[in-house]
Image (cartoon, rainbow, N blue to C red; front, top):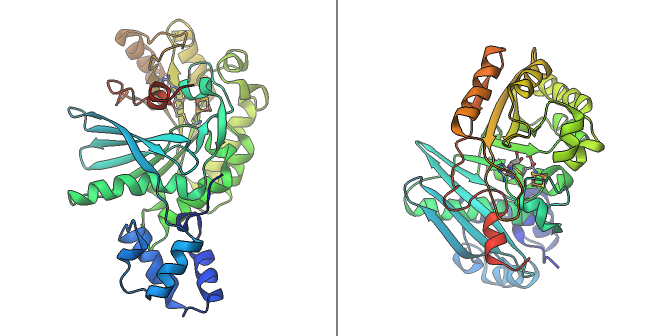
Length: 347
Ligand code: SAH
Ligand code: SF4
């Protein structure tokens, strides 16, 4: 079982707790700044908090951090992937990507994933449990501490690691709000991107949050029959409903939606599919992100040749759809979805 940590609490919850302990109102701001701005890892560091309070916090709200284990680096790409061990023995992975001035952390929201997409290593692992808000945010804080040593900061967060964020909606949103809090980590809402496999109620709920975060939707196929084969949840939420929810998101936020499309050789990478995808998205405030398949042991798909990726891209452009190709960063260190854990831990 996950033991609650201070990173699991919102500012208001922390404030309420400290007030109930008889602390003055400014205590919560002090503690919050230590946790989220000064990136403290131990209560002992917080020397302007009374000793008695630090002792009580250690007892009742232990500051347990995920313990970094196996680390993989790609010096050329500047990509780093870390396996983080959680207090109950589970492990998750988080990735840091360096791109010019950008420092992007990719976070997981679940241990494993219950969705089970056919091409995804995390999906093949099955589902262990949801992460807590603190466990999600701690992945960002881990890299923030590392970057701080070099005088750098995390500039972007993508919720694209292990798990389906909208099947762990409350914890994901709380982690984002905590990281966004101006008195703490202070990362602007527009610096976050949440990727969902198309959980319609989650998309609609996010539209109502009043938050300017970016939404990415994993489409992977232009018709329901093919999509259901690749994405089992396609049975529950057909494309029409997913796109309607995306439209509601655009209306509520004014933000362009990204559609992710994993290119699987001979499966969904034909020009026919490109044209069908263009028809689906035409007239929408949309952007397609093509992701050439990242191979992993046990996954029965192939990455299309470079020329195939390029042809698909051009066909979308020709039909008026904005598109980029995600040059799979981290492939050499197996920083694709679920792959580090799959290699280091027994199934
Ligand atoms: N569950 C969410 C977010 C995590 S997966 C979702 O599915 O959107 C993040 C992205 O990685 C998704 O677009 C997913 O389709 C993609 N992905 C998963 N396995 C992959 C693989 N083997 N190669 C390339 N992309 C993959
Ligand atoms: Fe889960 Fe996303 Fe992987 Fe599908 S692609 S199994 S939703 S993590």
